[in-house]
Structure formats: structure tokens, C-alpha cells
Length: 152
Image (cartoon, rainbow, N blue to C red; front, top):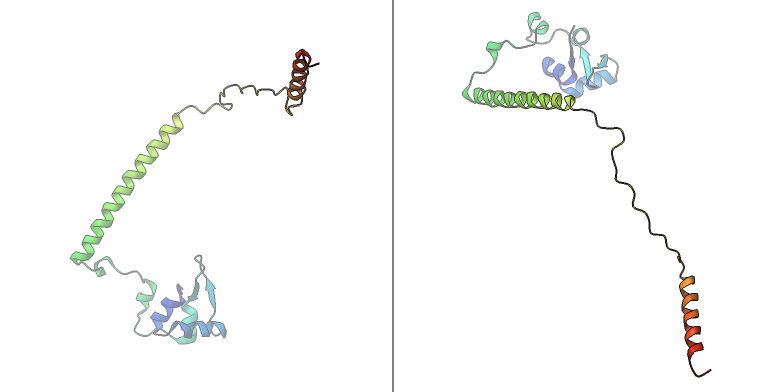
């Protein structure tokens, strides 16, 4: 037997959804969860509790998909159909182009595992990182100038 969501089953039986949720909560009807995470009810379970759905024939329950001739044939629907068909064609062309591009990229040689990098630039070494040598040198220069002065 088919499984229908609680909303569709409520429409089929002419009930409110809250009535069916209450029946599930109280255990009168057993619900399952479909692949989309929606609560669904077995038609056989609904027939057991509520009887046959009103105004439905057995063939309508077995084949709920409408026939092609039952679809509306209005100009508005045809325009929408044509627009959607055009979008599908554009997407198909884009997909074909992307597949060709991927195929071309796969034909390229693989990148080298170790890319060539320029050698690192040598870091300038600071012989006097704290300025102590330059201070000593300036003191020596100062002393040597003082020794050269005639005041001594």
C-alpha cells in the first residue's frame, strides 16, 4: 500500500492535519518517517481506522499520478514550459562546456612536486646588534681627540 504524508492523507480523507497528528500521538494510527524525514501514514492503516477515503475509487488510489491529458494546456503554462525548456538547454550546453574544460585540464602535465623557488636572500648580519661596539668606538674617538688637544 502507498505511504502518504500526513498533509496529503488529510486532504485525501477531508480531515485536518492536526486531527491526524493527534491520532498518531494517541496511538490510533501508526506513522513512519520517510527518507526526507517526513511523517508518513500507510493507506492500509488509514483504511483500518477511518475506512475507505470518501469519493475515491480503488484505481485512483493505486495510480495517484495524473495522466498527461489531465495537465492544463493553457498558453500561460505553455509559455512557462518553453521558458523552462530554454533554461534546461542552456544548462545542458554549459555542462557540456565544463566537461570539455575538465577533460582539457586533465590532459595537462601534473605540476612538479617541488616548485622552483628563488634562493633565499642572505640576511644582513648586524655585527653590533646592541650598539655597544659603536659606543666604545665613539668613546675611543673622543678620547683620541681629547689627547690631541693642547689643553692637556
